[in-house]
Structures are given as C-alpha cells and as structure tokens.
Picture (cartoon, rainbow, N blue to C red):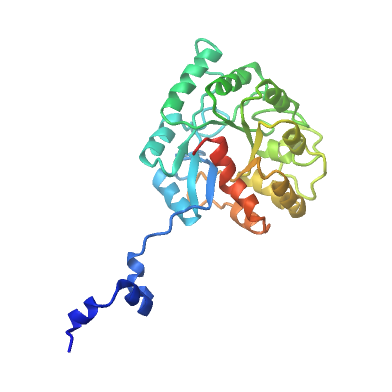
Length: 313
C-alpha cells in the first residue's frame, strides 16, 4: 500500500486543482488590468479640501477598474486647480511604474521664457527626453487662440507630442461653434489636439448660443450640427477625451445619439475618467457599458486610439 506522501506525490497539480479548485486559488496569478487606457488622471491634491491621491492609491483604483495604464496630467496654471501639480512628480511616478503610468508635461504660456517658441521647445523637449508623452492638461484662463497660447501649440507641434486641453466659460475661452479652437487646428495641422471639459463637450450639440453655454452641462436631446462633429469631419488632428462629468454627460444626455456618435467617431475618441481624489465617483464605466458598443468600437476608444496617438507601441 502507498503511503500518503507517495500517493500525493503521484497526483499532478492539475488533477488536484480539478478535485479542489480552491486549494490553489490563493497561489493563482492575479489578473492583470487590460481593458482601458485612461487618458486623464491627476496625482497629488488638486482642490483644497480633497484628500491627496497618491500613486499607490491610483494604482489600486486602476486595478479595481481594469485600467492597464493611466495618463498623469500636471496642472500648472493658477486657474486650473487649488494647488499646482507640476511635471516632476508625474515623471517620477512614471519612472517608478513605467508599465502603468504615462506622464504628460505642462507649462503655463504666461511663464517668463527666453526665446519665445524656441524657449518653450527647449523646455518641453527636456521633459519629453525624460519620458513625457504629451502636453497637458492645458487649462488656462486665456482665449484659446491668444498669441501666448499659440506659442505653446507651435512648440508642441515642433516637438511632436499631442496636447490635451480644457475648455469652459473661464479657461480655454472660445465662442459658440469653437472658432478659436478651429483657428488653432488650422494653424497647426501636425499637432494632435485632444478636447476635454464642459465647453468642448457642450459643443456636441448644435444649439449652443452664448459663451456662458460653454460652461454648462446641458441636458436633453442633442441637436444635430454640433461643432465637435463638424470639426472632426474637417480636421484630422482633433480628438475627444471622454473624461469627467462633461464627457459622461455628453453621451448619456441622449443615449441614442451618444451611441451613434461613439460608433461614428470611434477613431477620434479616448476613454478617460479625470480621477483625482480617493473615493471619487466615476460615471464612465456604467455609461459606456450600458451602450452595447460593438467590440471594435470599444477596442478603439478604450485603448487603441490612445496607444496610437501617444505612440505607446
């Protein structure tokens, strides 16, 4: 008769697992997050009264929500947040976790820089050499095509990185129809712009009448003829970041239009959350899961477009 040890040694791990799956569950490899690339997060303390979001906290949240990689966006303009989020911490976190974090860089266009565009190019290029994959969040209290803003666009185009911008009634200022954004798109055709914020996403609808409307979160059916569709049809260098309440609202306010828009513009949209504080509610997961999007559309929006535009592979 075989001893218990001899009997056990003769049974393969696969056989034991088949007999009792729980026996090996504790030793199983954890599932790697793979569904999303999030093009919009912030680490640090963005608004006064918020708890600091550390890189470790963000990583844990990403794992819980199947997010493979997240873009870390600095905020360097006084209108953009309560506390400035500088480029250095984003680069440092990405160096420590290169398989999970994608750093961007940012500098306020009103900063005293010698040499104009060439000066900005030299600064931005140093950050790119350290791993920065894009510029932003560009969230500045100036007209979108102010000469100072245009210097930043020229520098980013020369360096060869995309720029993620914010528009509302206070920052990245524009008018109904987004003519100032269009001026920038036409002037810098080799620069990929990524749109975000209430002003950008309110413009999914054709009924925007005043600049004040660009700071709102409109409800109800979308009216055909919105600036976003028009600009995406005319300019190949404009993309949309679906993050924050503004991004989720633009799709959920009119789900039939929102679903068709995501299918129609599947090569121009990127998944994002704007996650910036522990415990923050993020509507994107439920909104997008409820649309029954085709798999190829999900693949493009959830990961593919970010991979392509940010040159991740």
